[in-house]
Image (cartoon, rainbow, N blue to C red; front, side, top):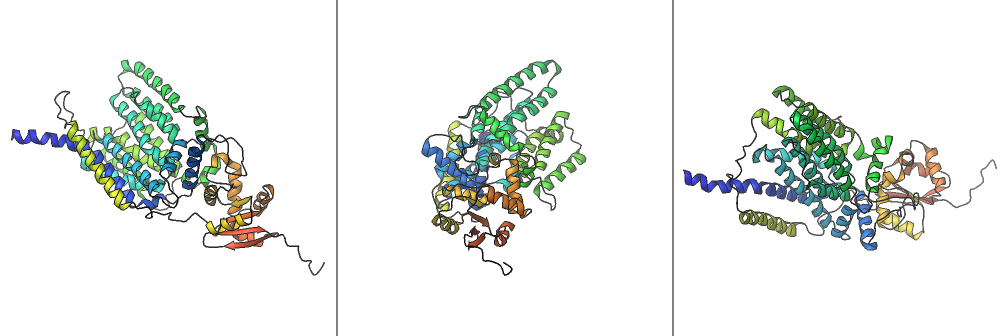
Length: 496
């Protein structure tokens, strides 16, 4: 019996160390198989174009060069590193590299989550928890910079929560993660805000005699993290630029991913909220006041903006894991230092390499260059070819088409960079294309000296243009409608 236990201990240790690799590989392969779902947002187009510009010019943009409505105005790319990475793996007419990179980010996120939850959940429960979390987050899984920052976000905030659970200060090793996050995506501002919230929970849970020293250490860490977030080519301007999107006021409720959560039909997010309430009442789990505030903050963020549902899905289990594990007696025992059995480094490395080799082999055989394509084609190529032959210079288009115009080196009226155009401009744009105010449409056409319009067939403005004097429909297909100014002289009426 003793021989059996001794021989199985390394296997159990190996399983615990290698489980995150297995879960991460499984998540990667799953999303590799359904990679088209990440190619449904035209913002991916201009994100790659900016990355290509950075690589070509060996410089970073400081002014807008892609629109004629904001040409030359100050603008910086707070996601420059992600854009460069996407540009490096992208090839014309080949989306395989972009899908692979995004799937790798999702796999890394799943692996990090499994590692962080390991002290409180056994492998089977952890696997059952990760699956609905990824499904709940799929609504915001696009091939865009926020996906490359997702594993960094989880590792950083997970490190904060782990320190709070231990009632200690965060590790200084988290600071490079903050610097990396700040170069990948502007969402690092949320990480800076969470330092204060999680730190308050750690201080409140500590012994009274240790609170002052612990508060000082968390304060120093917070200041150091703030400095680390400025370790970008733009310096502290990255922090200022990342907060601009939060100052768009009413406009945020009109942009799809920034809209509030919709409960008109029951989805997994709604089920999870109801489940949390039910479990809380039924089980009687008691949370500290600071952890309740932290949980309410995550819920509020998810309710306010659709794009924060993935943050809620990934961080809520980490916030609740220790209290739930202690309440239900599920905390996994840790052997005293020096007595725990760990698998050898060589054995762990061999197992990890085997998983990587298997994943690479499947990728090579499955992710062929022509397997992936946009679910909804954002490329009105024929219409743009026609406008180029007519030498159209100032094209009024919808924002999704604007992303494609950027890739064709045609200056746009508007694209996905709402923080550049500002609240009032984008509100006027929505009012015009949705047909809410024809006077606004006429004003924009005249103010910006528009010589052609390129609109999706489904927007009301494309039908309004058919009836505007001085304009005529020139072309239409399944994607877009083109109108140009009618220079023909007006025929005299009968009364004249």
